[in-house]
Image (cartoon, rainbow, N blue to C red; front, top):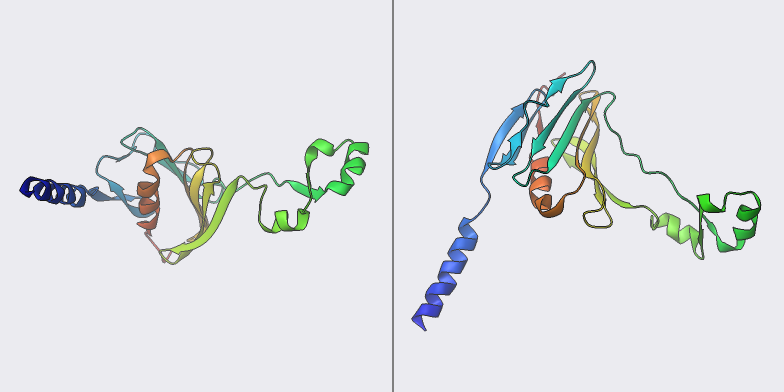
Amino acid sequence: MKVSWFICFLMIFVSCSSGTKVKRQNVTFLSVEIPDSWELDTVSRESLIDSYVGRIVTKDHDTIKYEYGPSVYTLHEPSRTVVPESQEQYWDSVGLASEVVLSKTPKEDIERCVYSSQYYVKDTIDDKELIWVFPKKFNKGKSGAYFNDVNGVKFSIYIDSLGKNEDDFISLVKSIRFLNKGS
């Protein structure tokens, strides 16, 4: 009986003490917390004509990319035209049947973004509005956070496949603090 209590206590202690240690890192325009086992890739960090790009490499060798400037990656998902099934013959006759999605409930499908491959959520971090993007199919697409106005320019941070680093990625983005707010 005493052994089982000891094992239970040990398991609780280990699970509570195994939190990921983080370090705060500065980049020219922001400060961010990343797990100790991750590294900002100083080799790829470079100043471009009007933008700044770089990457963070996780312990699993996944690459988180970030861009800051007026011409950085922006959200873009090809729009899908959703039409009633009753229009199938028309779209066939004009040769565009493969370009539309036929639906029994087109209005509802459009309102619910049924044919979007991603989820979009608005949020605020460090007093800046952003849009979180996550793929609807786990591990099948880009996840990221997109700020449209940080000191007059855009900032995006994203990863092609989150995998098991999802919680750490979200914590990283939530820890962002932009420098030179008065600029």
